[in-house]
Image 1 (tube, helix red, strand yellow):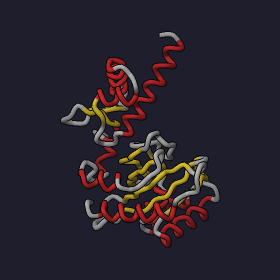
Image 2 (image 1 turned 135 degrees about the vertical axis):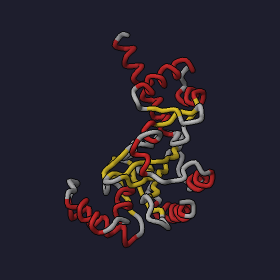
Image 3 (image 1 turned 30 degrees about the vertical axis):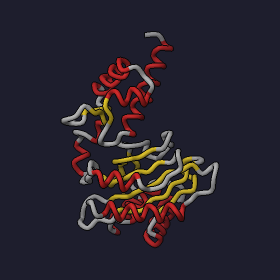
Image 4 (image 1 turned 90 degrees about the horizontal axis):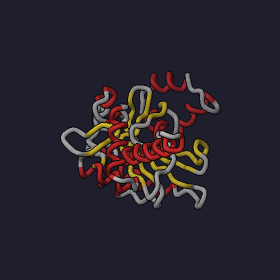
Length: 245
């Protein structure tokens, strides 16, 4: 394979992997992926086979759909107890009104990480801290991870903030956590990803299950952030989701 062909194949594989992530835990069938990526079915099939061989993509058990492998069959997934396949769950997320290029994410704590377990994108895949379904960030990094940390016990908060290496370090993160506790939401106005803002609320748990957060990433260059309206919509959605977990 020549150099140009190699670069082209890598780009196609990257595009395909991005679309697989958009499918969340439910995944997409081969034909749908080919259409979304604007690739021939034969090329899509060949690239999927390579991604499966590399452990990046897996077949959703009992179906013909493909999803990120770290959400199907990985040992980490055993710690995430969320009914992602319920129709009511998807409907509650999709009812949140978003801009055409904005996205909504469901985040869950996994030890000292926060993992994106579900996402709904607009017309384009917006840049985000996790990079989409299956991506991870450190507990406390970004609005969703800060919201989840604010719901943790004081011992966990002290341990995580003590080793924070972010701007301002321990005191800044502890301040962000306290602010999130008081307000009931956490937000970012483009400090972490240029031109991208974010807001997140927690999803209440009736039991001591996995701490969850619901967050939105939105473009803020072309319009002022709609944080107040989004917080109201996110809180309504989070209460609906709370009844399902």
